[in-house]
Amino acid sequence: MPSTFSYEWNTEAFKGKTSFNTGLFINGKFVDGSNKTTIDVVNPTNGKLITKVSEGVEKDVDLAVEAAQKAFDTAWGLNAPGSQRSELLWKLAQAMEKHHDELAAVEALDNGKTFGWAKGTDVAFSIQVIKYFAGWADKITGQVVETDERKLTYTRHEPIGVVGQIIPWNFPLLMFAWKIGPALATGNTIILKPSEFTPLTAIKMCELINEAGFPPCTLVGRKIMESAAKSNLKNVTLELGGKSPNIIFNDADMEKAVSWTTHGIFWNHGQACCAGSRIFVQAGIYDEFLKRFTEKAKAIKVGDPFAAGIDQGPQVSDIQYDRIMSYINSGRSDGATVHLGGERVGSEGYFIEPTIFTNVKPDMKIVKEEIFGPVGVVIKFEDEEDVIRQANDTTYGLAAAVFSQDINRALRTAHRLQAGTAWVNCANQLHANVPFGGFKQSGIGRELGEYALHNYTNVKAVHVNLGHEL
Image (cartoon, rainbow, N blue to C red; front, side, top):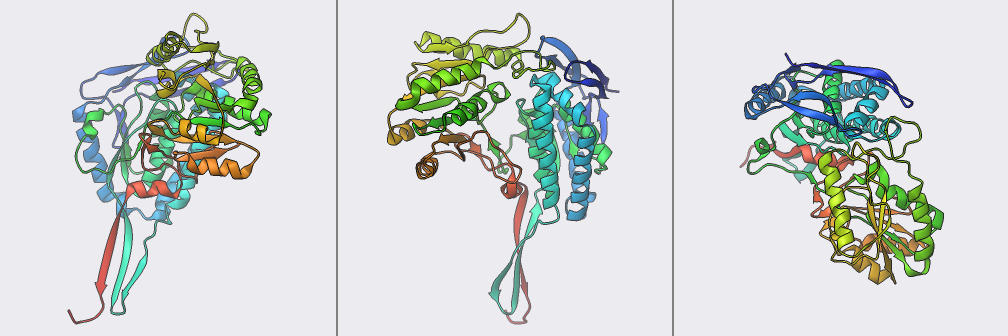
């Protein structure tokens, strides 16, 4: 039998405990992987082992798919009406509310984000997403299409069946909700693979799925090999990353622009695909903006995510820490100016100072490539045409932000930016009912909103002949 993980917190931010199984979740039960191998889960605050979780291999994938297909054919899929799916998703949301603080603590433990942020944003938004898709479950409808008075023609939106989902480590619980919400609402069963760096909230959620009363094998998995998902002619939805521009015009509200830009790049320790890492500032306010932005970044408190008053915890892993530091060193060697930060914080864990580069050139790695850390580059621009050209000079197209008190210019700029999301006088605003996804190499398809449902259904056209002639 797989092990049970137990942990107790007695910190400034949270006092409480958790306990759950660390096995693979298949057919409504936690089981050991076929090879009995495990994966180490490490605390990014100190680099020490938290626990070990079971590792799945190809044989486990086969068992999971078989069980998920059986569930789809019998207890779920077309056999579970939308009202039932809606009720179960609501019960899951209620179970999450019951375990709200516990989920936040588990999320902060292996991810490194602050407990306060995990509680107030990640868990709260995840619950909102599950509730939103619970509301959709009994509203998946087709259309009646007029073709001929002697014929009835209509469309149905049917679940695909067993879907595979791979979620990243930067928002483990939130991405779990983004993925399972629309998939379960539309009647699919799921094989889900969380990141090996941050598997704990996903495992805890499997426990809550049982608590909510979902049929066994509606959702299965744990550490599933990516290679098992490789086959031809499968529907694919991908959210892949970004190098998002934040554009601040001369007439921007300075205080708001500084606050939102700081949030835009340093939110979640910079580990956000939509992070506004390229900060374009018009020449007339460049010096003043840089001064205020620097002061705001200096005020960010870096430390233990369970300590009071902390704004930024550690990066998620030693691998990610090394990656970010290599980009910082690349910026230095390429001749950019480290205007702020650029160093490690403390002697243990994976903490990095909020970092600002200036005097950068378009061909530098820190300007072109996604760093996925608390590192922003500030670039001066002259006019609207200049900044649109620079902002669109990227292989990515996930998000962008524009700051101006001239709403006509703000909207004109937003419409010309090659990005799936454009924020005006704000940044990193996400809502359960608004689609999110990218252009170019930032991905395929959309998460959230009604658009997310399209990823998980097949459209069937039904033609009924009501007459007798050919």
